[in-house]
Amino acid sequence: MPDERMSADTPVFAIAVAAELAGMHPQTLRQYDRIGLVVPGRTRGGSRRYSMRDIEQLREVAQLSSEGMSLPAIARLLDLEDEVRTLHRRVVELELALREERANRPGVRVFAAGTTGSVMAVPSGRRIRRSTEVVLWRPWGSAQDHPDDLADDPDDSAR
Image (tube, rainbow, N blue to C red; front, side, top):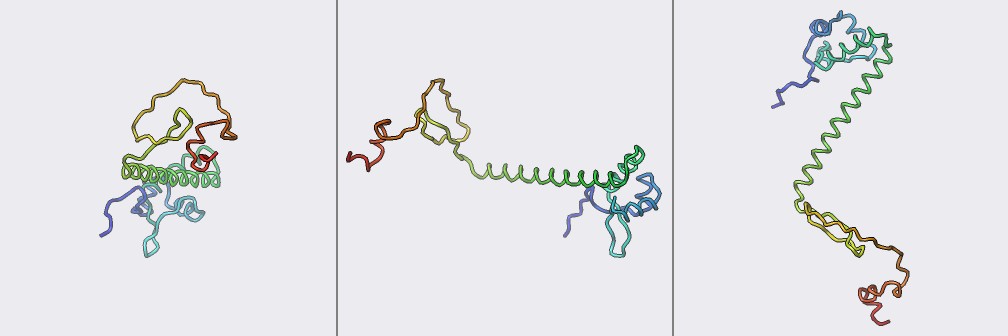
């Protein structure tokens, strides 16, 4: 059974009702449909059906037009608003997926640098005490530079 809840995008209003709600003449709505400015849904018989979002866009078009904005500029603005709405939905989806991923992976480890520069795993949520020591870093070019390397590498134990 289909979801029976309506959203702002559900096309339900006939052109006469949409024109009245938007404060426009029905012929203006037909013209906006022809030029692709506000395109309503269609029934199987081809009748126009406007959604609440379409009505809001019609009101916005009327406001912008009365302020002197051209119809092509208004069309571009509406396209950009649709793109922003789509991107916002995608961000919400990704944030939800991230929350689910974090919830499904408890105890995921975080990594930190140890005092010797080694990388160590830290359980999620645990705070690491910060060190204020100043450490001079230099690349280790040979075992003579860093004697601990000899003990760690079994191939070097014969030296």
